[in-house]
Image (tube, rainbow over all chains, first blue to last red; front, side):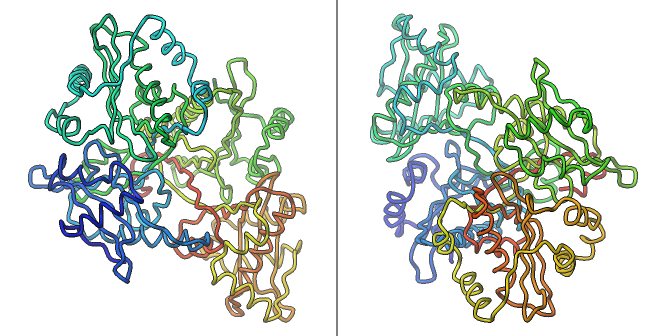
Length: 322
Length: 316
């Protein structure tokens, strides 16, 4: 197998491939509208030159050092491939071959620190382990949308169910909104309250350049005619991803955020999606909030490696990863 | 919730009844745990009403001046299992989270120079350990689903494995189920590295000659012209057979001998009504490939560890 950068000429082939095998985070609009030249797409080619798979890497420079990581707001390296094997043993061997090729390719890249994630659909990280990468499980929560609405709701914790009910009872009104400036404002307030960095240019490019009604939706909760909470999701033909959420700290209603998420889950189901993905939950308070909606916990794997002396430093400050 | 040391004599009846109720694995059985003698520390997880709701075990040993709390040799994991009475999905996950938080706290308090705790593949929530700064490694095993028909199991094998089976048959190898653990041991020892032998021979003997019987172990031996040339040894419980050891005579190596022993072990496990055949770990590249070709499902499990300086430099 051979791995090569996908250039502008091959982009239509890439787009066609990800339309069939990939999802919203593979779409090339992430490169053209959001991450530009920092995001590089790669093709995995069979010996006969056929495109068998794709993935991407995001290169960031800081103080002259190169960091390879997941692109901001993209959960993983978008590795997807077409596995045509029918027999179980061959199927496993094909996955192993792809991952060995990706591992070998990443090994040829020049970086100071590498920290990337594989999609949750990829279980096999052995080629990375054998090549001295640190593999650490991370988690997301997913709802199967094959169940009825009532069954999905039954999975919620009592607190979440009551919060949703209370919001409805109190007259909190949740509306599907095209006005993503409300989303931006609410998310900005939430970020600044948590004293987290808010990259305005990045959020702008996602909300106003990347997001379209064909790949996103947002719910805004109003109370006493004022927007008090939002949820923003991206979707493809199979999965809806909860990407951003926020609420107004001054006029918060306990159930408004929960009601926005509830509506998002139900809309994803109505659209015919198979899965609602909460898109990562490694922060304890966020994890317990997502868990209260009763989804299934799903591991995905992060791959980490740092060159000396970064490794020594990271062993102290990011011990769980390095 | 609390975790307390169990007295293997006094608490035995309660513990065994609980294991039976929860269909605990063979590695949780008292007959298995008994092989480790005083190194074995069996702990109970108790709810707020002081009822036994779970268990785990640790192999405690000393090396030079270091205290090691690790997974017992040849045990698949540290036997963590617990009762989850919740029905609603959110509550089920919350119970798991609480137990795992409690176990992570408990592991921290053990004050080991090196702690290695392997979670069963059925437990995928290692988050509390990550949050408490343990190292969590992903490891793998292969599981064969025994609900499949024999034809489907055969179809899942790689063509190389099928060829090996055919070759063994064509060459007239005789594959017999065996209770002759001396022969099994001899073949295992021919495959074990010297280091492995010196480290684990005591427990190998205890497993083969004290633990194993027809109700908990399966062994197959391949004979070529009357001479034993390969063997497999598995232990099993009510749901799963675990492949523990295999061996072959490198002087009389036959391509299909080991493969046919393994294939017969899988079929025997199916015949016993078990649900899963577990290859019990496959992190060495050459072993992994050998197991992979049996067409099972690659199944991750987690190894949690924490080491104090200077062991932290060695245990990565």
